[in-house]
Length: 240
Image (cartoon, rainbow, N blue to C red):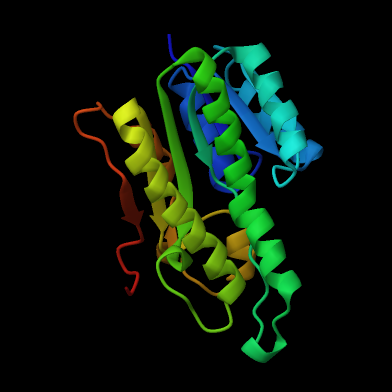
């Protein structure tokens, strides 16, 4: 029997696509997100297709460590030991010229794009200290994880911090049997929000979210003799 797959940022976009794919493959699923309405809609959509195994939703601000601890306690009670955590959260910070940047811009980006993942990872690791269960942690990054861009400093700083944190965890925890991996998404994902922000982009410029979800599950299921740390995905016509 498969252990629960926890998806942080799982109520929309890639997170919801991953939830659908994982649930169809027999994984119990727990979704974490800030919006109750979006979580309710995701649950209805997924359970209308099938009710094969346990499925739970948990409204929470993952940037809040106390609220995160409570949510993961609820997941443990509902599902038992966590088998995998996928951090899908990404909050874009509006572009600003360097001279316009304030401390608050970096603080916001770090809270939403780094510490929200850090808090969920911390709770997973604390639970594993008790259970010693098999655990996979995947953090989803972006082009900004590896290089800065014009007027994107706050987002790039937070996403690159998550990448380096992932690498540090992988080196420390890999020998203990914890698989930590980092995914770089280099391109536009075919969700409603991204399409709305890029109305003139043709369909072939977008990465299929189901394909990304399948790629993530492939890494979750890897044998420990052949673990991936980092991989990147992009549409065939992306310039890089």
